[in-house]
Length: 604
Image (cartoon, rainbow, N blue to C red; front, side):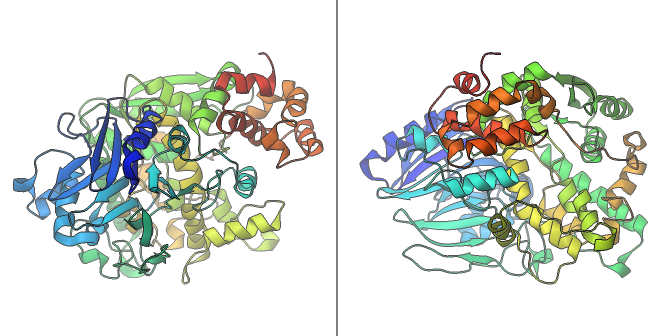
């Protein structure tokens, strides 16, 4: 896990600009920063050393090409073996085999990667590429300006270097308050966009000239072309997960999709076991200590079960519980699983004092904001794990791939039984229309698959994965997500609906597997909704907070004073506005986190 930044075709000022950008990303790469000018580009890499601690420094040069990347290529060993690359490799870096494959195959080499990554490749063929992994696990932001194109792992790098001022995009901010995240390539800052998940763009003379987008989910048709600016527009070569001949492609070992006549439930459980074990195995590849975040749910219990199987020493696991009356506390169930699996279990608690302390710190970390209150325990867990672990495996993606959310089950019911579409319900119809445009699935999917597709396109990358990236990177930790793997997706997404949702249970097949693999996880116990008691902590100060933040410039542009005060006079919906208010002072007005909190809530 690292931070990357660069300027392509930026002229004489590019090295100084890139150096300033890198200074804003040192929390992502606490082991050191390297700067380099190469082929008309200035590149910076802030490193968190995970694989090949001595030889894996970037920019990395091999086979005539140069790369800087954030993330991990999990199948680098398989690629080296399959294509007989070992005699050519000069390092043990997980990114080096990719450079040798690019020298042989060009752009098609991207389709062989199994991992999480955001990268810049300057090829020996004279082409320059920016790319992001298909699930969007790792972030990448870009802006085109008169001097060329700049890119970075976080928006703060552009402001630090003076490339742009942090000006609020009000339409995106309305999305944030409606959904807790923003949609698609849009960010809350005018003039700054994200590469969307799976996007690969070619940059020539500081301008994007062509691009394509790869789907994270299998068997979805062809790549989506992306319009260039001032150059050729092409769809590109069909990519791994999308190609009809994907199962025969080297470099990845996909699992053919199950069909109704392809085997019994027992056979599918056996295949699921093999697929998940393989994913956890490669996600454990690390030269530094690794462990996991263990909640009381079945997704993290599944990861814990496989890690315990694959490791000879007890795996270190961290769990966060809430110290608040009536709050759901998962520590007892997590401890039960930990004892059954002989984990090295550590617990941490989150109380009201933690809430007020971490709120401004999280707002600082989330320069691209999500107003999801799940950031609170995630941040506290990362804080607790720092110093013990460097790599953390988590259960993100299990619900999306195996059909776990209650909204999926509601979407399958008829209206007279309370069924409704699995989509958000903002007050503004225009916001819902924008969400539907981003979430639009391809034809031929079942209603359940349509809902899964929508979440993978919207909520997963722009909320859950954004939360994981920023909260862990603020503490110099790498977060890994074994469920969000092309092998797992190729198995899980095409499963017949009955193996995902059956009666009142989601994740049916995963529960059946866990029932055998780790009975202590109680996979058939009634799931409680995940909540953080933020409303209880805000309530005593609500009236004063509402009056204070109603006068904040960014808040006034989105909500009237009467609307803000009405929200804080009610019993729900206060958290997103409070978070946005504190966030706006930090990232739009330059306030320190402590000053922003005091302005919003007064002395504590």
